[in-house]
Every structure is written in C-alpha cells, then in structure tokens.
Length: 115
Length: 109
Image (cartoon, rainbow over all chains, first blue to last red; front, side):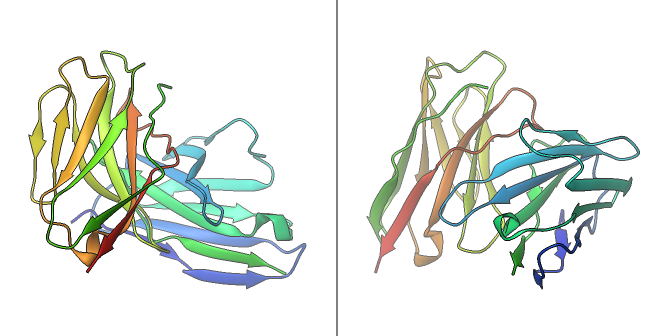
C-alpha cells in the first residue's frame, strides 16, 4: 500500500508555456503533500507544502506565482510551472503523508525539460 | 532545522555489511532520525526511522548513539540493488523533512 503516482513522468515544453504535473495518492488519503525539485547531481529541495483545501506554504525563495500548487482533494495535488524557462528544467518529485504514519511516500518524479 | 553530516560516498562489496554513518550533533529531543534512499532517476524510498532506541526492519537496522548525536544505518548484506544515495534526515515534525547531500553508496560485485 501507500503508492504515490505522478503524471507525466517526463515532459518537454517550449519556453514561455505552462506545464501541469499531477501527484496522486492511489490507495490512501494524503493529509499533506509536498513538492520537491532536484537538479542533476544535487539533493532534493523542498518547494512547498500543501494541505487539502488550503493554500500551499512555499519555502523561502520559491515564487508562488510561478509554481502554482492546487490541492483540491485528499488524493490529488497539482503543480503548474507557469511561463517556464530553461532554468526551470529539473526533476520534480511529490510526496504524501497520511495520518499516524512517520513515512513520506514519494512519487516516481517528473522530468521537465524546457527548450 | 538541525543539520546532519554524512560522508559524500562509500563503497561496499556485495554480500558484505555496510555501515552508513550520520552525525547530528545539534539534534533536539523531539527530532526523529529518518533514513531514505534514492535510486537513479527515481523518487526517494523510506528505509527506516527511530527516536532513541535501535530499530530493525526487513530492509535495515538503525543504531542510535546514546547521546543521539550520531546514528548508523546498517545494511546487513549489501546487494547491487542497494546502490543508491542514502539520506539521513532529522524531523521535528514527522511531516517536515529537509534533505542534505546524502551518501552515495557504490556496491561492487
């Protein structure tokens, strides 16, 4: 149990366009979902934390108007990269937690390439 | 957030035990010690966590120093599939985790 999926697994888009990445908890209700970004050969960097039905909390230095997070249900969170630029190319990973669990369940990641 | 220090890389031979150290000298009394690992081009995977006592599960063991300022993740018999980056993370709240650089484990056949 406790599977998290992401869609798409990879995407290529042109500079200036927007891209939406979905994160779903498949077999549990996620109390909280997290979005991370990982550049090549670097560690994961927490971008934002979101709870269902409320606004996401962004980490310092992460532009909330550029990285729009919507957490509409207990099983779905979306990250939209607006007006993407080549420097936004990265591996985006979501995770989810559920009540009374110490684990974060991570999705497989989405590789975004902006040309 | 309390910081952790891990070696950048370690090597092991297949079928042998591996001890991955983590220093966390500024750990607070309510910090849990979590270990995750990440295989190439995948999301991280939970390995184990603990607070004060040593912990065992089917993947690994976690040995926590008495003063809690360090811990060691033990893989009892490394396999090639254990080659990954291992992250030691402290979390005051079980939902808030900040990843450090981790240790890249190479397993040699």
